[in-house]
Image (cartoon, rainbow, N blue to C red):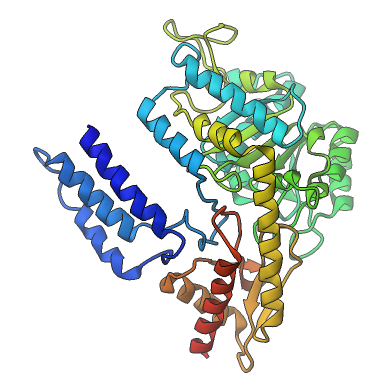
Length: 463
């Protein structure tokens, strides 16, 4: 065992040292993936050779998404303390089901959730659940909303389901993310349950339309989803105004803050999330701007009892149930057997504190503005949106190119194929664009400059 772990340790040093200068993806190395296939071995092989092969192929063909030049999706890096704690989680292999399965994992999770509440300025009375992703955080939060909504109709949805109920009204702006729709899909409401109240092609909220629709419900309970950090340009719904509507009409307010919740860390951007303490639930990712390893998300809920009501398990003689002092966080979220994913969160917060994470967010804000300035200064590039946070939405617009959407689709594909830097395309207000997101602690101004240089180089070659 120690020899196998020694192989990983030896490979880690070289790999981590290479991240600051390596390409995000080496297309030539993808041919190595064939070495992982073939029929299932009948009798197995030498474990040392197996791990050597996995490391050799993985360090060459794996996407360097924890490096500083990965700007696709919204993907954070992994801080040193978080990586070491994640290795510790694998080493200890705790089942964070309950206090009885691991008092250690339960206590670390309790502390980590408390620190997350403190990081975002939420009251100590809020409850929470650590989950695998923002999708599961939305699922957990909207699961609580579903239980609340059923209760308004006199139905315990956890016990009896949705069969006797009308369709749950869900309202949002055009910024509503696919992960929230997926959560509604999994909860049985359907991904098309959302009534979109948008005033333009970008998706900005039409509060008047939302109010009129709430009026039409004639007092029936509804769920509002406010979006803190839209994925194409980093824009925000006005959370405080959503909260006002929720309070006026007796709605559940959920805030999808997958990465935008971290705007709360800087005085420069904190006004973007004014009102989050008036929400009933919040979803966010730790493997985005907190820079801990995949998979790590969290749901924060104003009334902790809602988590237990929605996700408590039916009784089993050998398991601790609700109210049992030996129970734990498995009864507050969708997973029962759970990895101790609290360890990397606890470690990165303990190691770098509020100030360290605030500094990281503010550095990324500066880098986003630097990228915007580079785009604005390039005659063949066009920025499509204001830069509110950490995403810069822009496209190439060379002279003489008639079909800019086709050109930018091909440019995005060329960027991923090139592999030196990584960012994909989106469609923003009907226009194909790039939308690099800056949330990795390793990213520097030099990485931003390289990104712009590569985009311009590839665009020139395509003309």
